[in-house]
Amino acid sequence: MVYVVKYSGPFGFIKPWTAVRDSETYSQQFLTPSIVAGIERKLFPELLGKDFGIYKIKRHRLSYSGISQQQEQIQPRGWNAKGTAKNRTYERPYAILVRGVLINPVLWLAFDSIEDAKVACSQHICLARNEDILYPDEEILQVEEAELDSDEETFRGFELIMEEAENSFMVGYNRLDGNKPMYGWLKTVGNPVTNVY
Image (spheres, rainbow, N blue to C red):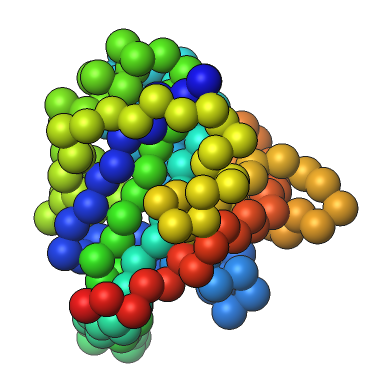
């Protein structure tokens, strides 16, 4: 038995890139281990001192209506020196970054205990940035875990199963554990991309 909380909002920013480029993984459509761990630590700040890992969120599922590509101007942290020793200038070049914004995202989070679900149900979450907020529904669903995979209408979406298996691919590097590669495989339930705008 799991306790499931539904989050939704008009839009939700996931991230512009991963350590493995999106041209290889198209990671906009799923949550990486670091994003799930970050959401978990926002909901349960007592986990901030623990090692990298996912402790309370047992499963998750993400669906959306579409992805809107947004451009953003950025600058690197460092400065580039130009010129001679007597006539030296410093500059920070500009670059354009394309970020994908999810339209009408719906995120389901499943927990083993009703207490954890109640804590999660009382808070908003951010998929990656503070200005893109998803709000919880008031109702906590109590379902068998198998129903998360069999109810293709309610729990449709993408879920990254965070394990190394035959059909796994690399989803990034764990900076908190010696830059070890992180692997997972994508589970798709129902039609994750809805046509309702």
